[in-house]
Length: 457
Image (cartoon, rainbow, N blue to C red):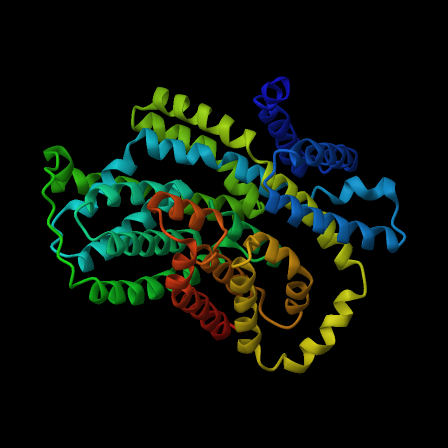
């Protein structure tokens, strides 16, 4: 009981380390960086017992392999803390995400947008496109919560539809819409990681990611329109006049779209103007942007109430990602300072004239490992040395596109992944069926990303 009460306040320790890391970006003190490294070791120790079994195994493997290589190469134990801080800004970004979620909830945009799925729809084909688009819009701000909200609304809306059809429809439309939002959202950690590894700018990659989203969404919408067209849909539930009023609905949508465009613009402009890292820029912008937005909407008190409670809860449960990112720092550093890169460089050179083949192979690796419960962040760590080598051959922008599209595409097929597991629980639907039904879509998603990346070489 005492241990549980201590973990209720672990957010204070975590946030202190993150704040110190952000501060040191500007101070650039080796002493402070070393202190942060020591604190990172403590974070690993206190987080281990609360992490899930999967992340314990994955992170433990990275620590064992990375540690073995590190000490085998003659590195000093005293120098170890300094190399554990490389991914701290990504953890700081994760810590701040609940504030953006909270402003959307306090403004009740989630409820309003989801009502779009109930207006002027005559069959499931039309509803499929509407559901996917709605989840996409929500996920840009709410991330995982968007899929849960959309699934909940659709379960009530489709209560009279055949159970098998309903489960298939909901899982396909929400998961695919969810994945299309994450590939370009500045709040997505997979995108931030891909940008961090390759060194490309958000402004450079954003137009191409939006192009990929447009292509994949269009193809999937056409498929869904014809696949579910044969199922009629009649909505007998009365919709409140203030929600269905087209003028009010358009006003809400324009409001949300304007806020999203403004936030993206600020991320690009401020990052370029002050030459700031992408993760740092987003981390610094989230809270002030959300706060000003809440003042404009006259929901400041609601925002602070929802935001504070949500932030504490999410920060208190960051153990999985803390373990993963800190262990990845050791693993990446150790691999990068061995002759391993030279070992894999030679076979890569033999097929370097076939970049599209390499891109597709990377995509297959992401999908294959995701089916066995490996988080795409873990796959990025496993492929880290390979990706570093590829940066010497190809355009970093192409590598970044392949990384993020391949990683995000797995979210729809990761049998033991969080979003598939939650969907399975919400719908009482087999995760294996969800994986199989999305496999072709995942290949299409990553394939379009690989083709665009190939075009940019």
